[in-house]
Image (cartoon, rainbow, N blue to C red; front, top):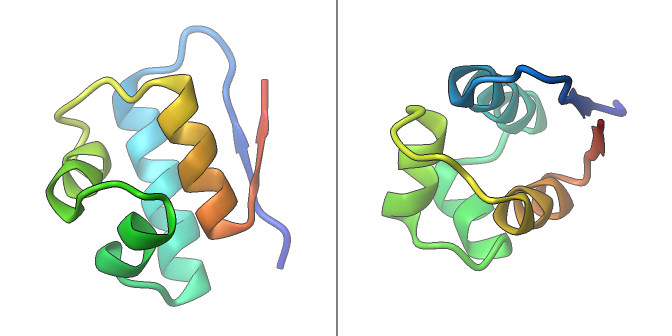
Length: 73
């Protein structure tokens, strides 16, 4: 299944968190697996999914690569 994260302004960190979590769950991956593939700590990745941090575009790109999804801006 091809999954795309759509980012249109204004997009809140809550919107990004929901889309990242949905993509991860659809791929059947754990937070730990995605964090490792994206070269992030598990704690930081979990904070992204809980919308506790503003994720940088660089880190979001790493997450998308780990999940094998694209970002549509």
